Length: 438
Image 1 (tube, rainbow, N blue to C red):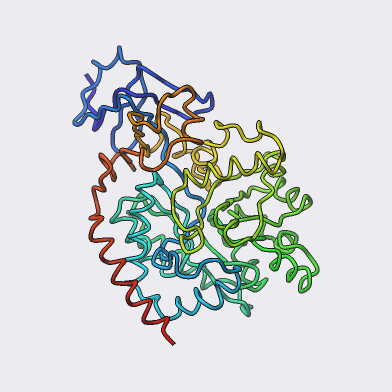
Image 2 (cartoon, helix red, strand yellow):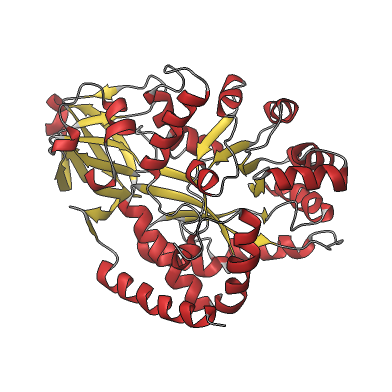
């Protein structure tokens, strides 16, 4: 008999493996934070788990992957809504960030976001903001997996990028023994960074194997300004700087043209579409149909809660799937299984993590969800993928496991005190309201 850390029995395993197998009458063996195997129940006697978890009446799925977020913005939720992006940034967000961004604020706000993400089934987020060490520390405490980056804002920079490299390497060294933490390099956007910033970041990312995370073609204004200043569309401009030599994650991509999508098709890069944020800010709708026709790597991002205004990534996926059926005048566009892949295996692939994440397979990290089906909203169940994309919500997520550890169990956070997080958020609300007074 083989010993292991955990055995999960019962339920249906939505594997998202290459065959998209759904396994019933099986059990999962987990040891040292990884999936050992998923086997038929008649082999259960071969294993003895230190702990066992019954998932009868549930779906067991890979954890959800959030391809673009801004965790420390959680305390700006609902602060300035119903505004265009640039008004929202210039008149509210940037001034408040200049006043409020202490290490304590970043840590506390990131902890709040980490808890909210876990409650929504997110097991990995790709985050861009400031003071990345405090974001990483918050995620470690919460038990959340994170790729973290320091947003680079340097519109007049003309150096060779050595200081960017030093900061990323220092971070890598400091967090080398933290398996939940990885990092990327992140020039913020073409309207906040010089061409030299992008060239140097791309060169560093390509040389060192880092992901380059940036905003791209989010608004029509960004497109028009780029055409006026650089004589090229945003991705054409970045391509001329050598950015596509690196593996990039481009957030938004709302205003990409067919020619720009061709450039992406020939690259190693991926896109994170952020439907709710783009709809709310009236930035536009990403050309998902054209992206998928070209077999581009596409994932789902929530963006920050200041512009979303929540981290319910299942809701984000459902909105995306239904919206693009209408946009493409095709009810068969993006069927539920393909849509669910954007949250799981395709999300992992977009971030360069498919070897370890995104599906329930032997050898991969034990990042998974147990979703309760014993409720009115979940029954009757005919097609699991359809139920996941069109019917279920965060309230059905019973358990969340990351690296073999439950960070949510029976709907309760195991590493954090939810009441304490709410109290802290309310304290910061009072401080922010004082800053807003004339």
